[in-house]
Amino acid sequence: MAVEELHSIIKRCQILEEQDFKEEDFGLFQLAGQRCIDEGHVDQLLEIIQNEKNKVIIKNMGWNLVGPVVRCLLWNDKEHDKRKYYFLMLDLLVKLCNPKELLLGLLELIEEPSGKQISQIILLLLRPLQTVIQKLRNNKAYSVGLALSTLWSQLSLLPVPYSKEQIRADDYGLCQCCKALIEFTKPFVDDVIDNKENSMENEKLKDEILKFCFRSLKCPLLTAQFLEQSDDTGDDPLRCFASEIIGFLSAIGHPFLKMIFNHGRKKKTWDYLEFEEEEDKQLSDSMASLAYLVFVQGISIDQLPMVLSPSYLLQFNMGHIEVLLQRTEESVFSKGLDLLENGLLRIEDNSLLHQYLEIKSFLTVPQGLVKVMTLCPTETLRKKGLAMLQLYINKLDPQGKYTLFRCLLNTSNHSGVEAFIIQNIKNQIDMSLKRTYNKWFTGPQLISLLDLVLFLPEGAETDLLQNSDRIMASLNLLRYLVIKDNENDNQTGLWTELEKIENNFLKPLHTGLNMSKAHYEAEIKNSQEIQKSKDLCSLTVGREEIPNMPPEMQLKVLHSALFTFDLIESVLARVEELIEIKTKSTSEENKG
Image 1 (spheres, one colour):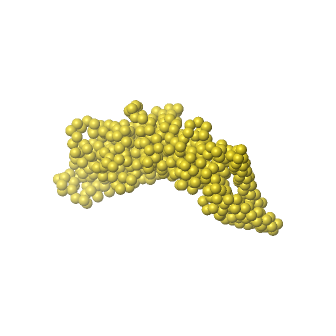
Image 2 (cartoon, rainbow, N blue to C red):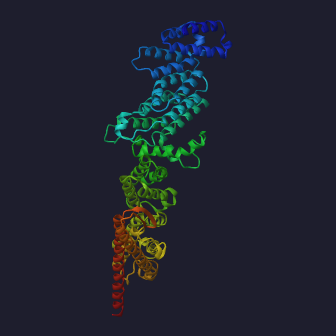
Image 3 (cartoon, rainbow, N blue to C red):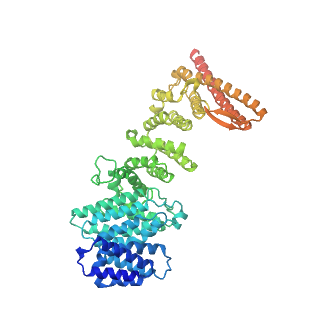
């Protein structure tokens, strides 16, 4: 019935001129064709399409059959006996139909699915889509751009495989799609290369490919994890995709060096591109991804001029590192750590000039490392962040170290980080006293720095438990200074500032310890009384209430706090004892 109905429609249309086809004819043709497919008359429908007499009708109306044919290919089992007819029919429709209508129809089909079907339909339609675009005579660049944008939008919905096993399994087909997408794009890249006239249309095509490369660098390549270099990197589909994208950039006249080093300047080579506002904001992610691929993964690194100094390369990469560290995904900010390490390892210790810290990213990057060290839930990445901050400190010249220490003491707001910085200050003072004199860690400059270290933020009211790491580090530094610097020499300037240190640090610390110990001893007494009643209770530690804690656990927490206070008190007593011994000894020497 459906076949006869389709024959009837075709017979009526055969006597009409092309321009006389009505909208009603298109609808009836589509409906009858769909019914032929549903009722299994695929071979007869194929004969109708192949019939030369129906060429004009198929050219104008045949694109309506592409959707039903594609859905049959997706839904039917690969062993389905009609499958070869569907493929042959799809090839014929691509060959015979109006390419403009067909382009829009194919893109609508690509936009339809979700989940694992996204990759299935992309892999099925990329070749037909490429053929259709190549048949277009006008606005080819626009069509390429529309296709690439649609394909990328769908691919960006797929989860990026993280582990080696996930890459191998490729459950959602992202890796297969990336490989197929490269093959889809290559002919259009070749068109740009082969066109020597630099026509307006060719420039537009170049711009569309450039946009696609930007988007691909952002997704999937920004979050993609790559196989270890020791593995067979040729089998890593995402690495191969990255390599091809970088190759496309060079082929269309935008080599990675120009891209990376241009980004961040007031006028960029791609300023004329009409990006969506949100895409424009994301360009920095794409450039950071490109920098990582080149410098850490070593893709096209051989194109890097040997004359570029390590500090020059670090300067340009610092902005990209900043972008990566600002992201919250571990797969992304870990790349920032790797890119920073790659840049720092090229530089000799104590050689990175302090003037670089006048560049915003040279101060925001260490602040980003602090966030990784304190907020990242993964221990290995926290440790990597700490190691990178230490490596960064090691590379700076003395004035740079001094400037960075001041910055981090003022901005970190974390006792453990401040203790780490104070330990580094102690190390620098030690080197200055033992090896080479350094004005930044002796005398007036050091005293200015010690003002940020040897004080309690809120005086005696400071939360000593929360600030215990910082306080212990400060006391250890002060003990070191008292031991190593004699009052008569006073190389560090400590002895002239001793009264201020006592008033701002030691005396308030004494008062704070007495208050804190009294508070916690009272809490212990209260907890012991509650324990007798065997009730749950709440506890305030570090000004934060921890509710419904069993009394036994509460006592452990309280005793741990008291132990911390006793430790601080013992170091404080030793510092004061050393100060008394030193001042008494100096006084006797002066009398003698």
